[in-house]
Length: 409
Image (tube, rainbow, N blue to C red; front, top):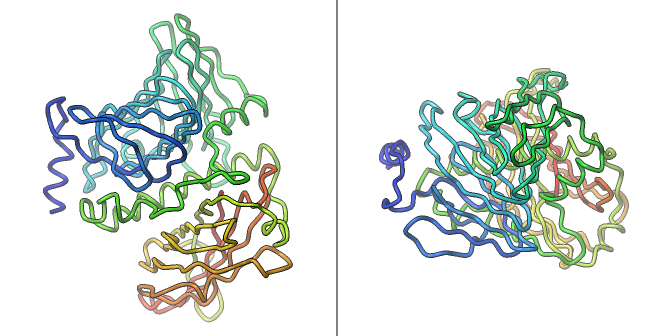
């Protein structure tokens, strides 16, 4: 089954071929429509497949995050239009090609395995210029006659030992390279891209708000459904591990954006349950990523052995955390919490910290002895961020693990 899929992925799609599933809509808000060649238009829902050559249009309140099979993540905001031009991927070698068009609106993307393998294999085309990518995270806005594109990281001066990335914005009038976090370029139709410049906080915040993920008040964030695992068909089409990896990439992308925005616009601040309980309604997902460490005899290694990702549903109206598609995963160790039942925080007080252990169902290859989810205020948003501290008895490795992960709602 997997070999057959790989062969299909390496065949370029023609207009007359059946639409090829290349990923999943991992989060949808508002009205989002898509049309694949030779197929009727459809409403995009969380967990549903996206196809090669899909043309995606978001409504006035719409927002969409897409996870491609190589873990490339695209997020588009309201009143945006994007086309998934080409996707080719060999999971055995990570060789392939990713090409997309942003015709209008706001967007953010995080490169996946294809671009990390060969940066020249991914590009994003806009009406005013083409963005060439060197393994990085980028955001921007485009209105047809003008666009602004910003490098979110990691640049050469990052402190996370990440391989530096960058973008090259070019058209037939010239090109500009950007390799510093928070710097960008503006392009107007018929003109060469501007020299690289550092965006002011207001400019950067405006772009990030266009693809922001934190619901406010009684807004409904449909990403709190099945997380794309069941209804997307990816568990059967690509294997459960591939689907899990793709969602882990999305969480990591959101976490990186959260950390960058926090550095620019204020660090997370403490939160108490009374403030969370006072949120009148709405739903969302606390998601993030971090590293885990092997521990023996109470002493933990100084070098991480893998990564931890999580996605915990929240229902502010029902005052619950967990349920639905909530999960915790540790890569490289195979320790998963694929079932986390909803627990109430309605009667809690003090610091906004929630013990998930009683709500974690059957796990594979390990047992969670500690799973504390702590909520924070981020960027002026109540409960806009989270962290998760874990202790795990890892039966696969015959030792214990400790992990700390953090990210956005």
